[in-house]
Length: 63
Image (tube, rainbow, N blue to C red; front, side, top):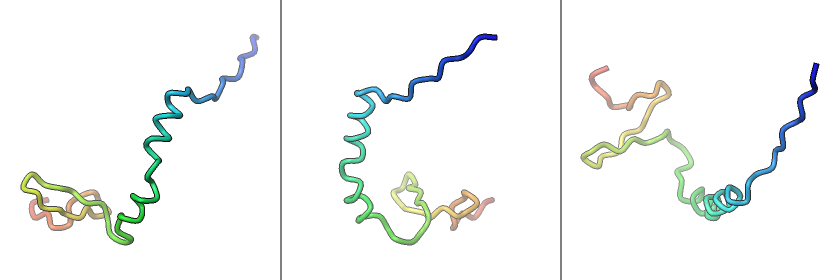
């Protein structure tokens, strides 16, 4: 039976740079985020609906 070599878990430099750019302003984004409330859904008309725990918009009429 042959032994399998463990995989290397190094992150590529280009991925590290991408992650760094993505997380640069994380604290600023968190300061702007609402403290309470669920995820929002923006409709085509621009209105925002809150999404419930079941994944449906809370004000959705035709289930």
